[in-house]
Amino acid sequence: MEQKFNHYFITDKTREYKKHKFEFMFNGNKYFFVTEDGVFSKSQIDDGSLFLVKTVIGENLVGDGLDLGCGYGAISVLLASNCKVKMLACDINERAVELSNENFKLNNINACAVISNVADGIEKNNFDFVISNPPIRVGNSILFKFFADSYQKLRLNGSFYAVLRKKQGAETYIKKLKEIYNNCEILDKHKGYVIVKCVKN
Image (cartoon, rainbow, N blue to C red; front, side):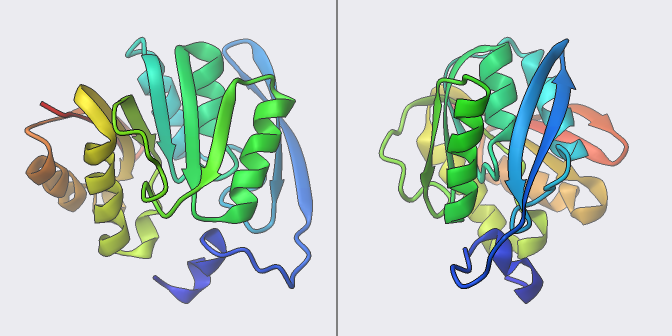
């Protein structure tokens, strides 16, 4: 893992992080998010996550979902309020998990976030879907764990959705996903982002 990205994974309890709060309009509804300096995309929902959510909503998701590497919970908030799903979110960063749970409460979302190294701390193994905007810049070993863990946590015929970036190795990662899943397709592309859907069967 590159040193400059450590703050996404480790909470430095000796440091005081500045809090931020922003409003966000989506599908005609207003949402509020509390963030901190130590989390990804602290001032607005990043383009990749937003494209992922917009695309996946078109899949008419239902059931239990797992948000891998949830950050401050934006994906789970938007999915839970626009689809008939119940979200469990996880992140290795303690403050990200705390912020996610704060944002679930702030937006009246029935969801929960827990601390977990990818999916190591998640006992449930039959999610209807897993979704992730994985931390592309941290290296293949961590990314490949995201992909492998998603497969392990899905029920049979469950789906994994991820957003990747063409300029950050999307083709390589799709090739790896096809090694894990028998059924893998590109749902959409936009401005260098690629939305991938993989089905466990």
